[in-house]
Image 1 (cartoon, rainbow, N blue to C red):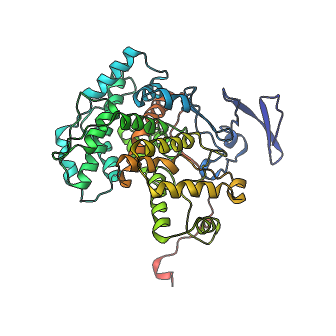
Image 2: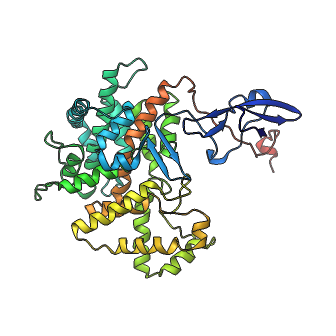
Image 3: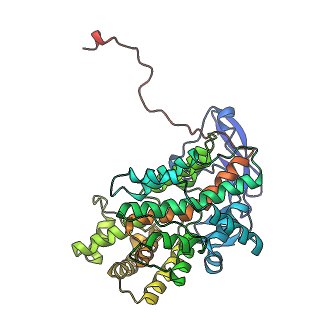
Length: 434
């Protein structure tokens, strides 16, 4: 394959036949070869395990530069959004394409409050889950169940219908998340209240009880907003691609988001924040030294994994991790907490980044390394960490689902494979199979 930097074409030769490939360029200068006609013109298709070199769509939502550690949502740097915005402003930005005016934010907040309640018949669903059921299992099942209680969007749905469905899901996911936690600890549900903001409402539903007149600390509310913003979107990660893939079949928004939740649950994706804390607890319990931990991480024959380090995209420090690390230190200082898990994490990061093995492989802490520790400081159990990730990621999923539906190039996703099984085999009757 040859390509001139000044040309918008590349050439591909297969079995003596040469075809031209269009070179697509993003607004940020990234380049991609358009392979959509390769199968038709050459009889070959691309082999790209895990789609690490494949763009599955054109998108105007999020831009990531892993080499430079840049993350933009609709053009806005994550650092500025985390510093100046509330979560619902960022959700509005992702879904509507622009930051809201004061009037738009007020209307959006009002819709979120209006649609925060769950249908009362759904309360009985929670009672049928066994005690100790993981909140992610409850969350995914309850979200897909919403389609039985609330109308689905049609392709010709107007803006008001879309806004209602979107805000309904944004608001109800928060309520489902809090109810799933209350169910897991055997406490009565706390209903949402029109008096509170989005994150304040969530904290109240999580931690208020008949014997605890909880009042959300404004500082905790601000921290919660930042954490959700850090998770709001990250372009074509596994869960977002799952949402788009399921959506390409024409499935409703609730089914698509439920698929995203299930994909996020994996310990190599959204479940990594819980896995980080469990790893730190294991290090403390077993009394491992930092040298021992690093040696285990480098040993290919050791099943131990250094969770929270490295990222498929980032080859430098994850910009979200920088914010999370700073936030973690601020929270501990504000609350005057001393957490041995944080001390181990800080020492482990410092030790690992002095090691050539990690530097040469660009293995820096990612967003999961510190967010779980912050949730822990706020009083969340580790089983809720991935649920909180899902709550933050929901606006991105919705934005991608909407964009996918409006994309004229969108077809049902249907990857190919390279078949490595036996060739055509003659059928043998059972009597003759010996």
